[in-house]
Length: 438
Ligand SMILES: [Zn+2]
Image 1 (tube, rainbow, N blue to C red):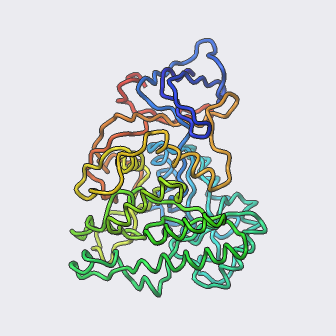
Image 2: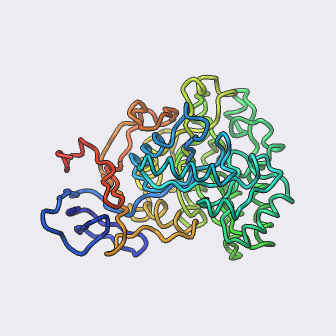
Image 3: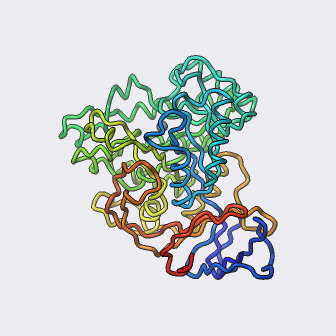
C-alpha cells in the first residue's frame, strides 16, 4: 500500500513533513512494491496510531451498555489503535482468567489493541490485594480499582510496594467517598442553584496527596486518572519536580466543558470527576502545555439511554468519548472554542503535532511502552486524520452502544478517517473526499 502525499507527523522523532508512507505485509517499508494499492492522503495527517489509556468496554457483564466488539469499533472509528480498559466490570478484572478473556474477545473483534487494566484489590472492594504477578503474566497492563479509589492507607501502601518490586503502574481514581459524600456535580454556584448535592474537590486532591507521599516512600509508579482540579495538578507538578515517578491524564471533556454545562441538569453532563469551573479547565490546559499532564484520555463510559434518563441525581456518571475525542481535543487545544461553555483560558496555542503527542508518545511514556513509529521496519500502526473535516456530532451514528454525550449537535473540526494495523486497513470514511472509492 502507498499512503500518498499525507502530512506525516511522528512526535517520537519530531517528524512533520509531506511524504509517502509505504506498507508491505503489515510493515513500513522504504518503497512501493509492484501493483501497490494507492491511498490518496492529500490533505490528511498520517501519524502513529492513537492511544487511549482510559476506556470502559463494559464486558464482562454489562453488554447492554457496551461490548468489546462495539467499544473497540468505536475506538477505531475515533482513530485509536490502542485502548487500556478499566476493571470495573462484572465480575471485575481481578483474576488472570478475566484478563485473558478480555484479551481474547478483543482479538476476535480485531478493531484495535486492548490492554486490560487489572484491579488492585479483589472485587475492587479495597481490602484484599490481587495477585499482581499472576495478573501481569495473564496480560494486565497496569493496575487500578477505577470507579473507586483505594482508600485504605495500608492496602494502598502494600500495592505501592508490590508495584515498585514488579515495576508496574498504579492508576488511581482519586476520590475519598467520605469527602465526596454523595455529591453528583461540582460543589459550586450551579449545584447550589439546582439544589443538587455538590462534590467537594478535596476528595480528589486529598487522595493524590496521600498517594504522592506513598510514592515517595516506596518508589512505585503512580498515575493519576482523570485529573480535574488546579490544586491536584499543582500536586503532580511538584511531585514531578521532585523527580518522583508520577504521571497524570486529563479527559477531553475536562479541557472544554465547565460546570455551567450542567445548568440544565442534563444527565449527559454528569461524570466523575465532575465538570469543574473555568479556572480548573484552564489549569488542565496549562497542565498539558507545561508537561505536568502527560496525556489526553476519554474515560469513555457508555450507559444506556434508559439509565441516563433517571435524572441528574440518580443517573450513572460518565459519557462516551472515543468518537468525539479528537475533534473535542482539537477544539480545546488548537482552535478557539466556539461554544459559549468554553470561553476563556489559554487556547489556539498548539499545532497538530503537539496535540497528537498527547495521544501517542505521551500515553506510551506513561506505560513505559515504545511508542508506535513510522520508521522503516516498524509494524504498521497508523492513524489517518482529516484535520479540516467539519462534522456535526450525531450520536445515532456512533459505533458505540452508548449515546450519552454532551457534545450532540456540536460542530467539530478534525476527524479520524481510518487506521492501519499490520495488514489491516481498519476503517476509512466512505465519504472521505480524497478517497471516494474507499
Ligand atoms: Zn474513574
